[in-house]
Amino acid sequence: MSNWYLVTVIGEDQPGIVARVTRTLANAGCHLADTSMIQMANNFTIMMMLQTNSDQNALESALSAPGKDLGLRVHIDTIKEPHITTPEPNVRVSVHGADRAGIIADITGILAANGFNIIDLESARAGRPEAPIYILHIEGSCIASSETLSSQLKHLIENGIDIRVDELDTLIG
Amino acid sequence: MLTILQYPDERLKLESEPVMSFDAELQQFARQLEKAMEQGPGAVGIAAPQTGHNIRLVILDVPERKKSTSHGRLFLVNPEILEWQGMEKGREGCLSVPEYTGNVIRAKNIVLGAQDLDGNTCQYEMTGYEARAAQHEIDHLDGFLFLDRLVSRRNDLYSRQN
Image: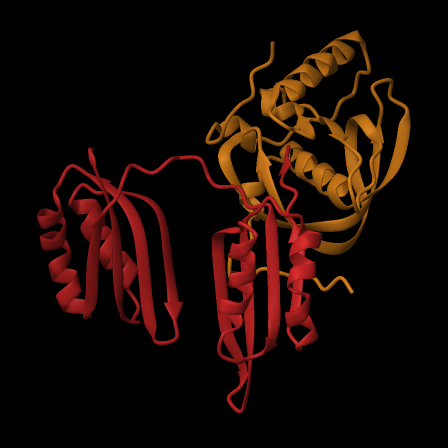
């Protein structure tokens, strides 16, 4: 199997999207690698790396039936063969506070300036509609110490956002 | 030379038997297991069943680190967790599961009872990383891997520490 693709599938959420899409791909001889499949409010989003002998046209054609039946939008990118080694996060940043525009931009701007490479970021808007809150978790790799990151994030903490920076000490046993 | 079994080897799922004889054979096996641990990259512990020997013996070797006890290198025979307290999320990997790490919830503080290689009973209070390592290794004795205890990305637990 020589071709690698990153396939993105998005549509209105309903039961059975994952089963139908992945069955279609399995029947078409595709081999899935890492994926991310998650509900976002009333939408469902899929991103998956896959390996196949087929070309992009054949892949598009295979996905056209489930796409049409389930109202899904499909996007396919060609990618390089991924490394099997899992990137190892060594820092976690946990954030929560009253929602406002720009929280992620403010925090990740400071992280990026410190060479922080984000491996995984997930966030949610929650709370009552009249008083929304924002919750954000970031894991990544960074050479700068957690103390350095904390001190640089301090002015955001002083402005009412709770931010905790933890070093991740992976145990191998 | 012992070989580390790698998942999905079914032998990793077996429950191990208690050690009854504290003899020269046990001592010799413990030394071989120690060598196997030392050859694992950055391992802070190993359990006998990781080498296909289903006996209740683990080695822990957690160096000094923040927020953790460290009792140095311990040979724990028939270990048992007697008390648990608190919960904490941490990232784990395993010599038997190469190229993957994930988050697992473990008790933050434990009291551990065990015997040494001569059969003497001992007890240890462990906190943080060392307590986590002990729970990870004792899981091997019951046929569990950290893969059995992974917490989902969205619904995990972030404890408040202040």
